[in-house]
Image: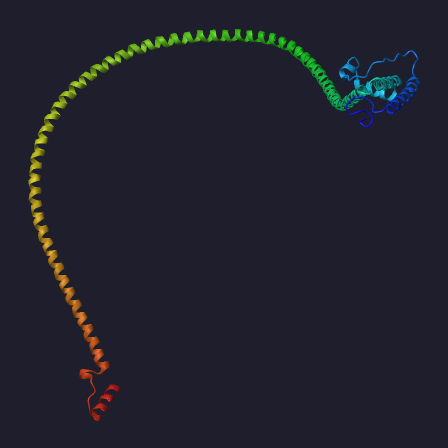
Length: 347
């Protein structure tokens, strides 16, 4: 557009370009009029409004399923095609008028930008439709699953209700039999209690008679026991008198025995002291004698040991002298004597 229009918005550079653009726009308008009227009803009135940007809410506020509506119009609705062609006609006609009077086409540029923006909004709406369809499908699956679960729950509940009905019927029948059994049991228990009370009354009567006899027996025993205790007390008093007298006699006898024992103990003590002194003297004498015998034995052992040692030393020394031929065992000079000694040794 910069090569056609001026950069300072002053208009078309030449009259030739202006005329050429108007011719091109008029030819486009002619062709678009023909396309708009093909397969379109004659009673449709096309507005001469200028294309302005409108949001999705303004365009589809009263329309449900906006994306489906937009797709259907794009693919099969010829009225929508005619409406779009009419918008294009309005844009070109507006641009033609601007070029004719002012030499600019800013309105056309703004309309094209608005159309592009609305198309971008429509594409965004279609993308959202795909995303929403996935979410709707997921929600539909969840709803179906919940529906099946609810159906299963209802079936289970009906089964439980039927089971509870049977249980209630069983409880009702059981209760009826239980009431009948309880009545019979109550009558039997009442009869058993009456029999038990009669037996207890009879037992108490017999117990009272037995206890009366025992009381009479106890009274007789009590009287006899009192008499026995009185006699025993008298016997005990007599025994006490006897033992008191015997105690005094025994005390006197024991005192005299104790005096005699003291005298004997003194004699024994004196004899013990005398014998102890004698024992000490004899013990000292025996100790001296034993010491004397020990010393004497040690001396004898010492002498015996010295004698044995001297004998061993003498024997050893004699053996040494014989082996070494010392002293009297030394060889003497002279042949005759030596031969005689040798012969004697051989013999």
